[in-house]
Length: 88
Image (cartoon, rainbow, N blue to C red; front, side, top):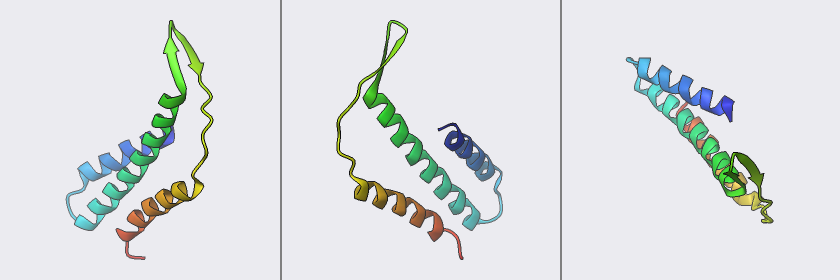
């Protein structure tokens, strides 16, 4: 998660320094969006399974089916957004 947050910070800094090309702006925004969504999923999962009380961290095991197809569709959609901003 640290890597994704560092990537968000780096991409947003590059975007703030970008003054020339709208294409580069869209590219950076796509990366920021993709990384942010990934971090949000991790945080949501962490918050759903852990609690902190009296200075102690407790983990609650949640028995849940993994919807691998839905997860894969979301991952592919993020990469489609990224690649649509770049002329390959």
